[in-house]
Length: 606
Image (tube, rainbow, N blue to C red; front, side, top):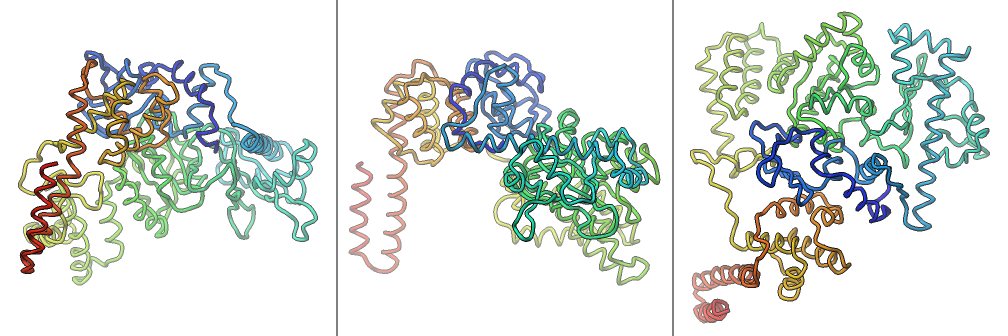
């Protein structure tokens, strides 16, 4: 549903939070154990062996000290199930039998009704096409085609595959009889306007129809495969209010249970591959919608799993696409493996030729690391029987191996390479070290500049220092932690400091907090977080609310923190003035330098 946050009545959000206790919500997915006033468990959003995922029943929030995710029960459901805010509220409201009416006034209500009508039309169209395939003369040729491709009745029913006849107005008549507005149906992508503008015709004709569902399982689009020869081979619904290619993964509604259980996704290129793999027992498979993998797809997958196995076609185009996908996953800390299909086969063909068991054992479970895949990919471009080919392959392979941070991993791949091309291991190791040194010299501080999520952890030769925050930063966090629990303290800070926090996120949280209390609401961290609607601010507020702050913090504590916050811009200004003074002295302008010195003294007095 594409409804914005503002159209969800506040009382619905509050009722949802009251009915869904944070511990009960999280415990369905995470094994929690009690530790004092907290509950702890292994984080479901990233791999860890020591529990850093914390639930605070008293404040009705969760927070992970490892990956920084945090929020209330609604936020947890959004993250764990890959839902939008309105979708999560709707699902949770339905579960608690809370009547929910989205829309806040005349403008948004009709839009929601149109979406409902389009969803209804797509649902009926899917059933209609499925019926035509299975029960009519029209669908016979399509059924024969599907059977020749190995589709069983069970698979056809499971994926609600259908057939659009080779006629101009089959769906037009079907929708007209049910009183749907045809102009609306055209906007939703089911119909298309005649060239002369006099009416509407079916968008899909003489095609095998694959319904595409959203995460809740409601049909939002179709992809139609042509029966004979012709272009395009697959025709997709156009982008609409219901459907966005870059944010849709085929079969996610059926796969999400297995994905959550295994914390792993198998990514295929096509619908046929997903369906064949499902029949073979791979129930965590999804596919992109005939489009390149996008950052939105990757973000959705990151919310659902820890690992992705890329299982693309074995031809050169499929392998190139697999190679291209690797950095997208690595940039969001998703572990990636690649399933390698030889002889240009696609997964569907492999299953038909070699069977389900071999596909699962050798292709899915035998998926290789990204380094191994890159080396296999590079090897294809060289003739290793020729000396030149060996040398060229060795050079390219060393570039890949040299990037690995682990010496053990480098050793494994160097030994493999040595055996493969009959060059001494020590020679390859030496060459690899030269490449590493040359790369490290060029790199700025930090060990992982390509992946910002893991940057600056280990400076060469040093033990990582504990993450100590500057005094003003700690003071701002302490102020906000007190304000979250105490309305009077928030009023006090508002009068004396206002929005003059040095960190933008802190200033924004303070502004939201002042507005929250101005509406007469009591201190309630979970409820306050629900009013933010900003992922970054929610994480920061959750992290701050985990601070242990004495409930009886006095005015002296607030004054000390306020003074520390106000002092920082002055200290910054003094530093700038000192640099100015030094520049003036170097330039021989001693009058200007003396002037700046007196300005520094005045600032220091402040």
